[in-house]
Image 1: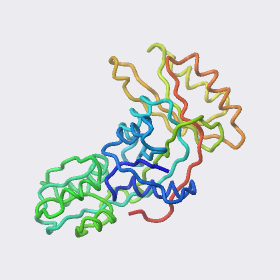
Image 2: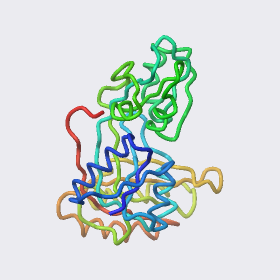
Image 3: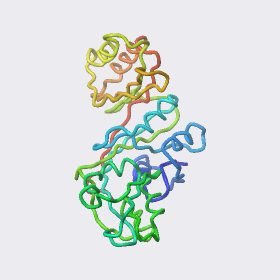
Length: 280
């Protein structure tokens, strides 16, 4: 089983990939690190791996836009499972914290630690990287650079833990999706879909969302992304909570919703697991 994730080794994506593989009972999967979330999805779409793990939502910063955009570009993919992973960031490096003048990390991690950075390193320049583990690799050996990364990433690159945990919200967690190719399931506690409307007219979105309410399906999340074609045109991503045995209601909802949409992508219903305790 070839499993792509946001690399390099030591990222939270790798942690999620290992746990999701265990939940799927895959024995010794081949982990394939990729540079960038789009590259992870692209590897699956092009058949260079059998499954892929991507972060879709953080409890502090919201939706991961690169993931949402990539999913919309590849509606042939489906969600097989989701995992909520606690996130505990550390400031890591080789020099004393007082000498840190540059902090590197993934943009999401920088945002999740913005208050801590403002309080403790207000003059430090914040530099985005493709992942937290890549940030750890880049600061190894530097006396003035620090990285926001996980404890395993610090250990892998021989870095000192200068402060831990530094995320602004103690309950910080990220939801990861396990993606693969194949038919979408209608059974599971959670379902994900995305759609665009025929036109931006009064009541068009309300009419579409009304399909869920009429058939008793609760939206647990709705998020919009620009279509990138013209100003004011949006794509809407929706997660639905599905009571047990609601597959028929979901199928009926999709049938009613489809004529209202210019494009409708259904990513499937799937199980949702949560890692308890403190993550690293």
